[in-house]
Length: 278
Figure 1 (cartoon, one colour):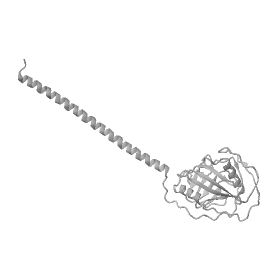
Figure 2: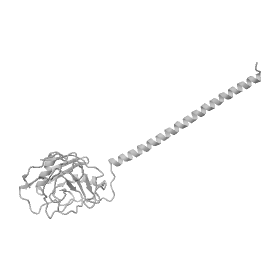
Figure 3: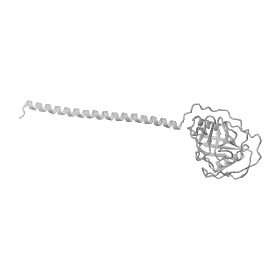
Figure 4: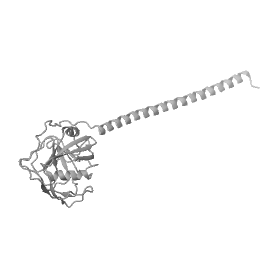
C-alpha cells in the first residue's frame, strides 16, 4: 500500500500535469486570437485602400478636372454674312464619294433648294443641349444636307471625336465611326467666300480638301485662325457654347498631336439625338 508521502507526490505530479495542460491551452488560445486579430486588421486596411483608390478613379472618370492654361474667349464673333447674297434658289449636287457610309443613309435629292431663311436645330447630348441656327443664306446646300442627315437619324448615337483647346479652339463631330475619317458616302461642293473669318459661335463643315464636304462639322468656341476654306452654315447659341466650354475646360488626350492637333475630349460628348424644328 502506498505511503502518505507517495500519495502526496502523485497528487503533486497530477496537479503539475493539469497546470501544464491549462498553460498550453491558454497559449494556443492567445496565439489564435493574435493571428485572427492580425488577419482582421490586414483585411480592414486592404478594404480601406481599395475603396479609397476605387473612389478616386471613379471620381476622375466621372468628373474630369479642368486642365490649366486653357483660356476661352467669352465674346461672340459678329454674325457671319455673305457680302453678296446668293441667287434664290440655288442648284445642289450630292455625288458619291467612293467610300462606304459610316452608317446607312440616303443622300439628299439633287436639284434646287432655297437660299433664304433660317432653321432651328438642337443637338441633344449627354453633356447638355446645344441649340443651333442653320442659315440658308450662308450655305443652302450644306443646310439641306445637314437637315437630311439629322432627319434620318444619322447623327443619333454618335460622338465628337476631336477637340482643340489651343490655336484652333473647336469641337469636331459628325462621324459615326468615331475615327475622324468616316462620312455619309457622298460629297458636295464648298460654299465659302474669301471674306470669311471664323470666330466664337460659328458652325462650319470639316473637309479633307476642296469640295469634299460630307457629314463632319465643327463648332468654334474660341480662336480659329483658319483660311476661308471651310463652309460656315450657321451659329451656336450661348447656352450651347456653355456646354462646349465646359467640355473644353476638361481638355483632351492629345491623340491628334502634332497634326491636325488636339485630341479626344476628356469629357466625352455623345449625341443622343439631333432634332430639326421645321
